[in-house]
Image (cartoon, rainbow, N blue to C red):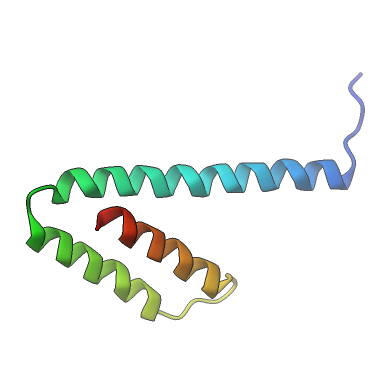
Length: 79
């Protein structure tokens, strides 16, 4: 029989999963975006504009500052 995990252990595991998902999504989107926009400044500019628009939206139940930091990271990945 396996040993029951503490709440702290479960929380740590969830934190690792969330961090991994965030990093994967940022890397995947930045990679795809760079490939799509490579050699096409108009598409890159349009994508950057669309990403910037995400920061203007209002959301509930999230950390808006953190969200906007992720958007900025994606914009940097496209640039």
